[in-house]
Image (cartoon, rainbow, N blue to C red; front, top):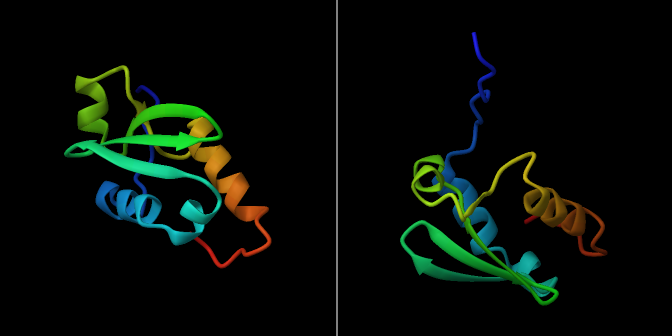
Length: 90
């Protein structure tokens, strides 16, 4: 039996909305621009990344980053948010 990713209580849609609509993340300098349905460009500190929150989209476009726990960019966003002086959550 192979390693499988355990299910998450958050749907891709909820995670996408949580991140892309976050006033806190915008205030910290994260910019989200919708490129196509379910595909976003995220800009932070002169770094530009193409991301998706949807595994099925990631499988179609392997040049995207799949945002979720364990992704370095995802972890950086969480770490940046958690060290913010205004830690009211995303």
